[in-house]
Image 1 (tube, rainbow, N blue to C red):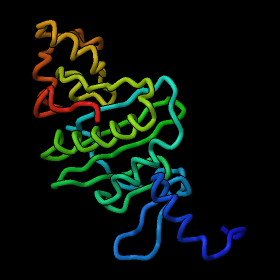
Image 2: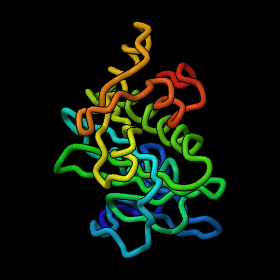
Image 3: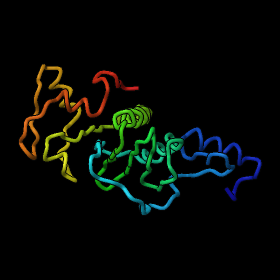
Image 4: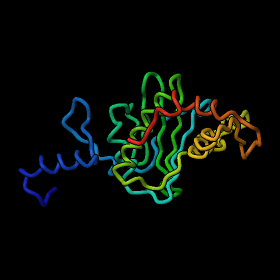
Length: 202
């Protein structure tokens, strides 16, 4: 802002807050701009087993999605944050949200007791962001619950829309393309949300 008079700083800051480009550190006068953070993931421990995995796969990934998500959810952050990701904590449940711009996807891993509650919060925030971007083409991908995928670091991911369509046509089972096991669609949805029809587009 060296090219701007100091009396314009407050106005510029308010603009950045309005467009979800920064957030204020709690109990501090300083602000964080996620886009300017280091791109490399910091070192921290994460337990991979028994995670709930959910992904967004974009046909074209609009710029700034993860930055806006970080700004919108910073109140749930446990101080682990970088340009391409954030760790959220809610009711003793943790979520690791990572942006992968090369593969045009956002991955979400959740561990803890209240996985689907935290996933619901995360999905709502992404839904709001997607709506503001005029709904980019994106697939919601859900981790398979077959025995093989439950213990795999790279489980098969089912397309959420396909699962919903199958359920609406009174289908009860769907096949995992990795293990070829048949799994219950209702049990799969039970892993990710309290009510299949509760989450709408905001």
